[in-house]
Length: 96
Image (cartoon, rainbow, N blue to C red):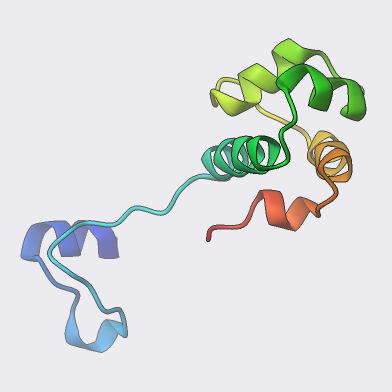
């Protein structure tokens, strides 16, 4: 509701405690965060999609689908991917 208010009036109500700019900022979905963080961490560690897939025990097409945001992923898979990348599941889902 607040986002619609901001979009319509250009600012949040005074008692909302939310600071805004003229731009409407939408929160990223968990699927989008996972896709972005997974690709970023994989590339930083110089790991191919195939290499990550082998380390996590999944198909390389599955990694591609996750990174392109076309695949829903269970928390167990997120945990396996995090372990394969040497990080935590929380880090893969972090909005930073």
